[in-house]
Each structure stands twice: as structure tokens, then as C-alpha cells.
Image 1: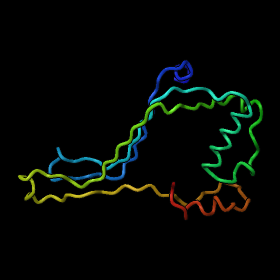
Image 2 (image 1 turned 135 degrees about the horizontal axis):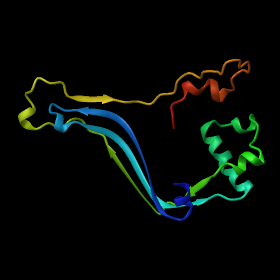
Image 3 (image 1 turned 30 degrees about the horizontal axis):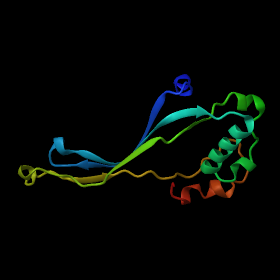
Image 4 (image 1 turned 180 degrees about the vertical axis):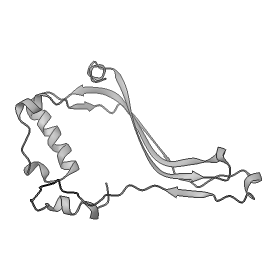
Length: 149
């Protein structure tokens, strides 16, 4: 797949986040609430150690701000073994579904529960590795207190 992407094949990326299961009074009318995005573009490889490292540092800052200053940086061998790709945003589309059940009039009187079963993504408490004796930095200890972005 990486070879095809680097050869310049037009590509699409889809990300879908399910927010809930929508249960109607008939099986046919069940659905989901979701947020979805699709981007279309052409990938290219980020070349050059400095450019690659800048991209990886930006990614690390997004995951755990401040962590890159604490950990050992990748060495030349590790950097050479890592591919970093970027994609142009030639076209993008997004779709959101946020609704309750839509029942047919003839199903309205059925003695069946209908509604939405919400699904939520939450952060859990950090779990230190065995033998870890280092006090957790703020971005770790506050992990479970912050909501995902």
C-alpha cells in the first residue's frame, strides 16, 4: 500500500466516529448517529531528516505536549526506518447524523422501547509500566481529567 501511495495514486481516507446506536420499533429502521469525514488527495513522502523530525515532533506534541523534551530522540537508524507521509487535501467531505428513531406510523403503537444508546469515548487513568519509579509529569497525571480534543 505504501508503494502505491508513494507512486502518486489518488487516494481517499475515511474516518468515522460512532456517537450512538439508534433503536427504532422495527429492525429495519435502526440506525447510528455518527460523524464522518473523507479526504481525497495524493500522498507524498516527507524527505530529509530535519523535515521528517519536525513532522514527528509536531505529531508527538499533539499526542502528549511536552513529551518530546523528556524522551530520547530517534537516532539516524530509527529515523531512516520510519516513513512519514503527508497528503494534499484536494477534496474533502463531511457528514453528521444526529437523530432519534424514525418509526413508521403503523409501528408507533408497538410495545417496544425506542431511543438512542449513546456511545462516548473517555480517557482512563494512566497505568505506569512495571518498575516505573518516575513521578508522572502533568500531561500524564492530568490525562484522565481532560476530555479528548
